[in-house]
Image (cartoon, rainbow, N blue to C red; front, side, top):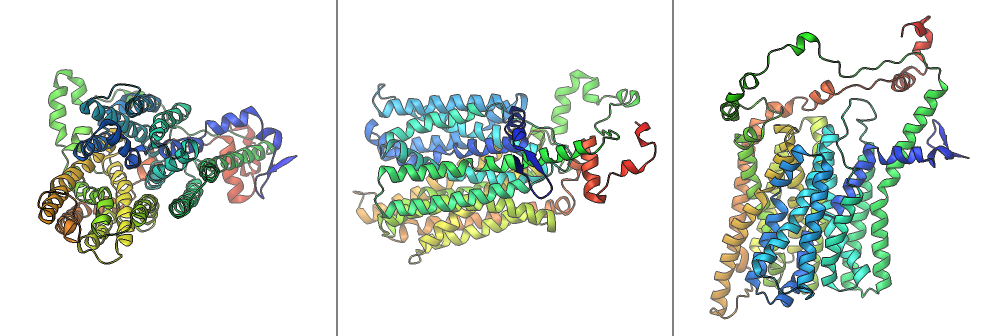
Length: 599
């Protein structure tokens, strides 16, 4: 009995079912990607805060201002991940994932115990601490899984960021399907699910996610599986969108919810088939090589430094340890060439990083403000409750679409046409201005389109931001710099949501209700706020053009050339024969008389 691995060959089933092949699959770089996909799919608990926030408000007797304070600390925990980045600089990824799992379990378990009455009602500052710790576990999952994947696939970083961020964007909808199937409509139990499931997944794959040395071999640079992962994620997103809409219209039984959750889970595990397929291909090639008499083993790897190179003078800072502190401050303002590895301080004080942070404050702050207020925007424009729920679902799905589109498309146009990623960021910001203006002027029935545009643009900004940071400042300290880029989101949210939108909404509500009720109805409730947000976003787009200009020469060249030049080339007898078979159809070594004596 054989397993067909393609037209080129077959593999005996006993080899595929053997423990050795199972180990090969689990230790492969593609299984590592699958593990990261699952971790990210379970790391978006913060996106469904609105589902269980009503339980916190009711059971603990909070008012809306207190609940908003709790929500702010949630956003701070989600986006401020500098600690996880610093830890990841000095430890392997499993340490970061394990810490994140512990934080997730502790934070959400304490919230669950509080709203179910198993412990005395905590003080407000304690609840803020619990949700900040629980939400901060998402930053640890991002750092441990996503940063590791980017370092393992440096020539496909846009694709990796788009795919993993896309699964993160879908995680809120996935959690909703699972909790409806497991617990019914018990939203308190959703907090329990949020507590244990992400922690369990991180622990299961804690040793799978690891840095795999990058090589320039054909197998290491194969990116076709990423497109299969993309197709699976698109199918999952479409299914979740259909289920979300149908569940709002049709009364589902518990069995129907279970079936929906089962199909969603099946989609999540389909990438395993892609992983096995890739490993079977490798097994086929190995079997074919065994049929060809081995002639010579050529192995090109990193050569050991020569005595002369070992004797090269140390940098001045290392020759004189007492000057390290002075040298660090001096070098902070003397960054390397763009694309080389910046130190953390060099990156933080660079003009390019300041531009990126400002642009992200404008862009992410504006779109996140629209997302957080979508319910009240729909209410003020007199949309029915079912339509408001549809807006939330559209934002979730198009958030995913924006992430995968910006990641994959920006990678393709960059590699083929040298289209700079900062310019793609500019275009996304300009597109988001259209969504903000639709909200500002309350165009009839335009909120559906606005929610699509806002969701897409919010999602699209993240892969672009993180890819630009990795490309401009290098990968050496990417764990920390990646998380530093996330800080822009809560800053922008606080300025544009709390200080601008919230304040102007309350002012208009007081005009309508003479201070009795703070519910505002009409286009004017958000008109001025979103005109300001549009102007701020447009300013961010104009400033981003400065980054486009500064990086024009860098993106005009081959930004990934250094990875192909510096990576070791693993040319064993198997890879030599495989390449020659592909090119010539014969083993050239067999044509050379006496070649067996050349080794």
